[in-house]
Length: 200
Image (cartoon, rainbow, N blue to C red; front, top):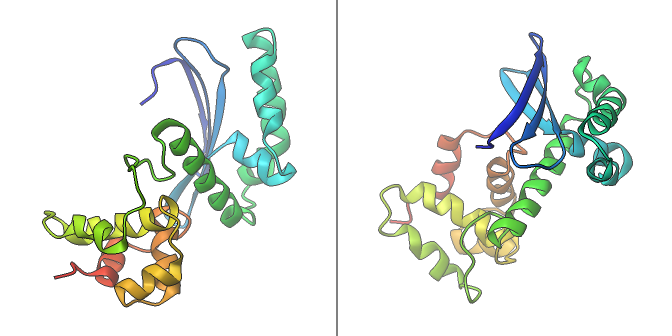
Protein backbone atom coordinates (compact mmCIF):
# COMPACT_ATOMS: atom_id res chain seq x y z
CA UNK A 1 0.00 0.00 0.00
CA UNK A 2 1.08 3.57 -0.67
CA UNK A 3 1.28 6.18 2.11
CA UNK A 4 -0.84 8.90 0.54
CA UNK A 5 -0.78 12.55 1.44
CA UNK A 6 -3.62 13.44 -0.94
CA UNK A 7 -6.14 11.15 -2.63
CA UNK A 8 -9.03 12.31 -4.79
CA UNK A 9 -11.53 10.01 -6.45
CA UNK A 10 -14.11 10.86 -9.09
CA UNK A 11 -16.44 8.01 -9.94
CA UNK A 12 -19.59 7.01 -11.78
CA UNK A 13 -21.40 3.70 -12.14
CA UNK A 14 -19.03 2.59 -14.90
CA UNK A 15 -15.73 4.40 -14.33
CA UNK A 16 -13.49 6.20 -11.88
CA UNK A 17 -10.42 8.42 -11.82
CA UNK A 18 -8.02 8.47 -8.88
CA UNK A 19 -5.50 11.25 -8.37
CA UNK A 20 -2.98 10.81 -5.58
CA UNK A 21 0.16 12.31 -4.12
CA UNK A 22 2.37 10.12 -1.99
CA UNK A 23 3.89 11.28 1.27
CA UNK A 24 7.58 12.01 0.97
CA UNK A 25 7.67 13.69 -2.41
CA UNK A 26 7.43 12.66 -6.03
CA UNK A 27 4.92 13.74 -8.63
CA UNK A 28 1.18 13.10 -8.33
CA UNK A 29 -0.17 10.15 -10.28
CA UNK A 30 -3.43 9.29 -11.99
CA UNK A 31 -5.18 5.93 -12.28
CA UNK A 32 -8.25 5.27 -14.44
CA UNK A 33 -10.69 2.50 -13.60
CA UNK A 34 -13.52 1.09 -15.67
CA UNK A 35 -16.21 -1.46 -14.87
CA UNK A 36 -17.15 -3.88 -17.62
CA UNK A 37 -18.60 -7.39 -17.74
CA UNK A 38 -18.63 -7.62 -13.97
CA UNK A 39 -14.95 -6.70 -13.57
CA UNK A 40 -13.03 -3.58 -12.69
CA UNK A 41 -9.89 -2.75 -14.64
CA UNK A 42 -7.34 -0.19 -13.48
CA UNK A 43 -4.79 1.53 -15.71
CA UNK A 44 -2.17 4.09 -14.81
CA UNK A 45 -2.19 7.17 -17.01
CA UNK A 46 1.28 6.16 -18.24
CA UNK A 47 -0.26 2.99 -19.75
CA UNK A 48 -2.90 4.99 -21.65
CA UNK A 49 -0.25 7.38 -22.95
CA UNK A 50 2.04 4.54 -24.04
CA UNK A 51 -0.85 2.84 -25.84
CA UNK A 52 -1.56 5.98 -27.84
CA UNK A 53 1.95 7.33 -28.43
CA UNK A 54 4.24 4.31 -28.09
CA UNK A 55 6.00 5.88 -25.10
CA UNK A 56 5.03 7.20 -21.68
CA UNK A 57 7.80 9.80 -21.65
CA UNK A 58 5.26 12.69 -21.39
CA UNK A 59 4.19 11.29 -18.00
CA UNK A 60 7.82 11.02 -16.88
CA UNK A 61 8.35 14.66 -17.82
CA UNK A 62 5.66 15.73 -15.34
CA UNK A 63 8.18 15.11 -12.54
CA UNK A 64 10.39 17.87 -13.94
CA UNK A 65 7.73 20.57 -13.61
CA UNK A 66 8.51 23.12 -10.87
CA UNK A 67 5.42 22.77 -8.65
CA UNK A 68 2.70 20.35 -7.65
CA UNK A 69 0.12 22.71 -9.17
CA UNK A 70 1.90 22.59 -12.52
CA UNK A 71 2.18 18.80 -12.31
CA UNK A 72 -1.53 18.41 -11.54
CA UNK A 73 -2.47 20.70 -14.44
CA UNK A 74 -0.29 18.67 -16.82
CA UNK A 75 -1.80 15.38 -15.62
CA UNK A 76 -5.32 16.79 -15.94
CA UNK A 77 -4.62 17.79 -19.52
CA UNK A 78 -3.22 14.35 -20.34
CA UNK A 79 -6.16 12.63 -18.64
CA UNK A 80 -8.60 14.59 -20.81
CA UNK A 81 -6.60 13.72 -23.92
CA UNK A 82 -5.78 10.06 -23.31
CA UNK A 83 -8.52 8.75 -21.01
CA UNK A 84 -11.63 10.46 -22.37
CA UNK A 85 -12.69 7.69 -24.77
CA UNK A 86 -12.17 4.95 -22.20
CA UNK A 87 -14.11 6.86 -19.57
CA UNK A 88 -16.93 7.44 -22.06
CA UNK A 89 -17.32 3.69 -22.58
CA UNK A 90 -15.07 2.96 -25.57
CA UNK A 91 -13.42 -0.31 -24.55
CA UNK A 92 -11.95 -1.16 -27.95
CA UNK A 93 -8.40 -0.77 -26.60
CA UNK A 94 -8.99 -2.81 -23.45
CA UNK A 95 -7.00 -5.88 -24.53
CA UNK A 96 -3.83 -4.03 -25.60
CA UNK A 97 -4.08 -1.88 -22.47
CA UNK A 98 -4.07 -5.02 -20.32
CA UNK A 99 -0.96 -6.26 -22.15
CA UNK A 100 0.83 -2.95 -21.59
CA UNK A 101 -0.20 -2.92 -17.93
CA UNK A 102 1.28 -6.40 -17.46
CA UNK A 103 4.50 -5.25 -19.15
CA UNK A 104 4.69 -2.26 -16.81
CA UNK A 105 4.22 -4.49 -13.75
CA UNK A 106 7.00 -6.79 -14.94
CA UNK A 107 9.33 -3.86 -15.45
CA UNK A 108 8.54 -2.49 -12.00
CA UNK A 109 9.08 -5.93 -10.44
CA UNK A 110 12.41 -6.25 -12.25
CA UNK A 111 13.54 -2.87 -10.94
CA UNK A 112 12.33 -3.40 -7.38
CA UNK A 113 12.71 -7.16 -6.81
CA UNK A 114 15.16 -8.23 -9.50
CA UNK A 115 12.80 -10.48 -11.49
CA UNK A 116 9.81 -9.84 -13.79
CA UNK A 117 7.42 -11.78 -11.53
CA UNK A 118 8.72 -10.33 -8.29
CA UNK A 119 10.00 -13.73 -7.12
CA UNK A 120 13.34 -13.72 -5.27
CA UNK A 121 16.16 -13.90 -7.83
CA UNK A 122 18.28 -17.05 -8.03
CA UNK A 123 22.02 -17.28 -8.61
CA UNK A 124 21.49 -19.72 -11.48
CA UNK A 125 18.92 -20.72 -14.07
CA UNK A 126 17.03 -23.67 -12.56
CA UNK A 127 16.11 -26.68 -14.63
CA UNK A 128 12.39 -27.20 -15.03
CA UNK A 129 12.40 -30.25 -12.70
CA UNK A 130 14.22 -28.15 -10.11
CA UNK A 131 11.83 -25.23 -10.49
CA UNK A 132 8.63 -27.27 -10.36
CA UNK A 133 10.03 -29.39 -7.54
CA UNK A 134 9.05 -26.50 -5.26
CA UNK A 135 5.46 -27.71 -5.52
CA UNK A 136 6.11 -31.24 -4.27
CA UNK A 137 5.78 -30.44 -0.58
CA UNK A 138 3.61 -27.35 -0.89
CA UNK A 139 0.29 -27.07 0.90
CA UNK A 140 -1.37 -26.00 -2.36
CA UNK A 141 0.76 -27.64 -5.07
CA UNK A 142 -1.41 -26.61 -8.03
CA UNK A 143 -1.08 -22.93 -7.08
CA UNK A 144 2.70 -23.29 -6.78
CA UNK A 145 2.85 -25.04 -10.16
CA UNK A 146 0.93 -22.14 -11.71
CA UNK A 147 3.40 -19.67 -10.25
CA UNK A 148 6.24 -21.84 -11.55
CA UNK A 149 4.81 -21.70 -15.09
CA UNK A 150 4.87 -17.91 -15.01
CA UNK A 151 8.30 -17.80 -13.42
CA UNK A 152 9.71 -20.28 -15.94
CA UNK A 153 8.61 -18.08 -18.83
CA UNK A 154 9.30 -14.59 -17.48
CA UNK A 155 12.09 -15.07 -14.93
CA UNK A 156 14.10 -17.89 -16.50
CA UNK A 157 13.47 -17.53 -20.23
CA UNK A 158 11.87 -20.88 -20.98
CA UNK A 159 9.60 -20.94 -24.00
CA UNK A 160 5.96 -21.96 -23.81
CA UNK A 161 6.90 -25.01 -25.91
CA UNK A 162 9.56 -26.10 -23.40
CA UNK A 163 7.27 -25.71 -20.39
CA UNK A 164 4.42 -27.40 -22.24
CA UNK A 165 6.58 -30.41 -23.08
CA UNK A 166 7.71 -30.72 -19.47
CA UNK A 167 4.13 -30.55 -18.11
CA UNK A 168 2.60 -32.57 -20.96
CA UNK A 169 0.38 -29.66 -21.94
CA UNK A 170 -0.14 -27.74 -25.17
CA UNK A 171 1.86 -24.52 -25.70
CA UNK A 172 -1.36 -22.50 -25.96
CA UNK A 173 -2.36 -23.80 -22.52
CA UNK A 174 0.91 -22.52 -21.10
CA UNK A 175 0.29 -19.14 -22.72
CA UNK A 176 -3.23 -19.18 -21.30
CA UNK A 177 -1.82 -19.65 -17.80
CA UNK A 178 0.75 -16.88 -18.23
CA UNK A 179 -1.85 -14.48 -19.61
CA UNK A 180 -4.28 -15.19 -16.79
CA UNK A 181 -1.63 -14.69 -14.10
CA UNK A 182 -0.60 -11.46 -15.82
CA UNK A 183 -4.27 -10.34 -15.72
CA UNK A 184 -4.30 -10.20 -19.51
CA UNK A 185 -6.96 -12.93 -19.72
CA UNK A 186 -9.88 -13.91 -17.51
CA UNK A 187 -9.55 -17.65 -16.92
CA UNK A 188 -10.63 -18.75 -13.45
CA UNK A 189 -8.03 -20.09 -11.04
CA UNK A 190 -9.97 -23.34 -10.73
CA UNK A 191 -9.71 -23.89 -14.49
CA UNK A 192 -5.98 -23.19 -14.43
CA UNK A 193 -5.42 -25.47 -11.43
CA UNK A 194 -7.16 -28.24 -13.32
CA UNK A 195 -4.72 -27.74 -16.21
CA UNK A 196 -1.53 -28.12 -14.18
CA UNK A 197 -2.78 -30.56 -11.54
CA UNK A 198 -0.69 -31.26 -8.46
CA UNK A 199 2.13 -33.21 -10.12
CA UNK A 200 1.44 -36.19 -7.89
